[in-house]
Structures are given as structure tokens and as C-alpha cells.
Image 1 (cartoon, rainbow, N blue to C red):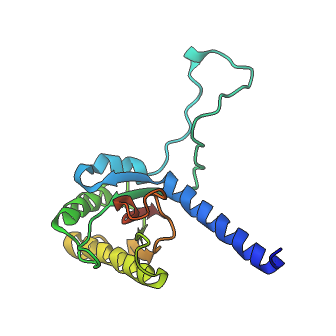
Image 2 (cartoon, helix red, strand yellow):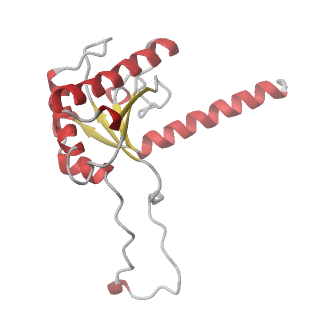
Length: 188
């Protein structure tokens, strides 16, 4: 039997991976070619207050059927993952990525999101070392922030960049899949 400390470290690592996978699964994913301001505003804007039960459904004596997905709490951060492409093995944005970020900037400057701050999370697939992927994903997130600030005048104070490396794979069946190389916007 392994020593208790090793078992606890292994259990903590498994829990961290599960939490990362759960958070990634909760992200709304947008392909950079089919991105719209409205979809981003809906994904990142304030949650609308809960609506009362539909009177057409009748009374249920307090029974509420479970929904297929848990409803996030109103205080939970709003997240949207965007499949932004970069030049291979660099943080350089492609023209298609810049076009997608143009849409992101317009959404950020909309009245619904104008008072919100955002963290830009960079993600990488696990092909490189952990340290390399962490640095690359951080550089990619910083590249997105720099583009939004310089090209669109989004206030730098509203944006933060953080690299997540390959810690939150969206597609665990295919670790090198494109959706694992993404940028996630988190409304703060």
C-alpha cells in the first residue's frame, strides 16, 4: 500500500483534474468563424432573474423536475470559450482570430458588458512540457488582451490575462484537438 501522503497527493490531483474538466465542460464554446456579439453578450452578461413557473404547466405540489444541467448560481462567473487560432507554436494571432476578436471587442463595448471586467484564460493542448504549455498559454492570453486594447481601445484595467497550460482540457478523448487550444473569457 502506498504511503498516505502519496495517496492524498494522487487523490488531490484527480480532484483537480475533475474540477478542471467540469469547469471546461460548463464553458460555452464559440467557433471563431461563427461568433456573434449577441451570443457573447448572452453568455457573458448578467444572468436574468429566475422566471416564475409557467402557469400553463399547473401546480406540482412543490415537486420541481430536475433539469438535465444544473443551473449555475447567479454569483458564478460567466464563461465563454472561443476557439481562437494562433500561428503554430507561437502567440501570434491569425487574421481569422483577429476578426473573431473584433466581434469580442464590440460585445465588450456593448451597454450590457461595458461595466464588466474580464479575465482572458489561455489554454493549450498537452503536446509540450507543462512549463512550456503554461508559458505559451499565458503569452496567447496576453496577445489577446494586447489586441483588444490596441486595436479597439478596450480599457486595459478591464482585462487580465492568465495562462492555464493544458490543465483544463475540453476534449479529453483527443488531447491534441483544436478545442483544447482556446481562449476563455471569464466575466468578473
